[in-house]
Image (cartoon, rainbow, N blue to C red; front, top):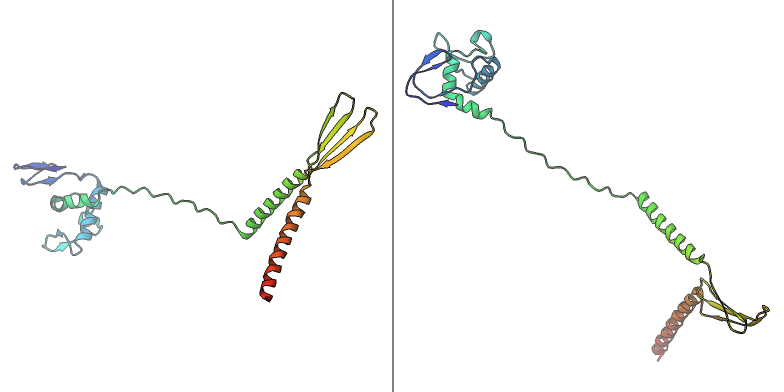
Length: 207
């Protein structure tokens, strides 16, 4: 707080001349007075207090020099430099640190290998489950008592068997191609087409 006046005022029970005084400091607070004197010592290393002989000196943390006492010279120094000291000891708000994002760990070669092995095993299990699917069987009877048994196998082929009422096989028919056969035909066809292309190129180069 700054006290501005044109009349004499009382500071620490003493009448002082009419000037602006900073009354923020507590003269009875020894720690606060010492802090201000330490600041003066640092600001004026050649001395700021005046001895009886007229020479300048610093308090220098010596009780004999009035260290921690709010006497006349410290009061006069505060009247002159109090505002500057108050600004220097003003607390600056500590900025909130920005959280550092946690880096995503890079998988090691062993972890990558384990992941690929797991994927391969999953594919094998799915293939095995597909191959072990049960055949679908459908049984129907006609007016004559004949029984038609239609079996759809997992490989894609269908077998149809017709029997009479005594269980004698009247006819048997298979239709469709297995997955392996289809794959063989596709590969064989591709090889055949490739052979024809190579033959045509070779024959053309001989001409």
